[in-house]
Image (cartoon, rainbow, N blue to C red; front, side, top):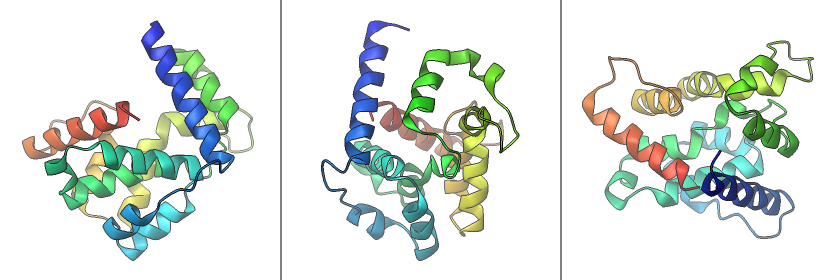
Length: 173
């Protein structure tokens, strides 16, 4: 991993720690304005660090993309599938250090200490299911499902542009 990526990850970890320690207030108003009551309920259940990350991603979307209700919803909820997965800061650090080898450590057994690695690997699909159950727009569901992977061939061209905007904003947070 190059030095720039390490610096980015260290900054990201320190920001998450600051949020978890409540060193600064979290302005949830942009999420309240953008999300339906059912989607807000999902967002409200997310760990505080993931909420802050979603708000950061929303803020980093270019103005014209942020106007899209489904893209704004996806920005806020793209990591909802990590919820309940025991992805504490030490696990997140381990995931960064393991890189592409994280799959070797993953276990689908929820009682295993290796389960958080599995959650990390499969959070996009799980998040898409949660968004679908909450009645989110199908475009939001698709963006959440594909935000960390190669999209399937069926994804419409307009959604590919939204996916690129989401990924770019996500990489800046």
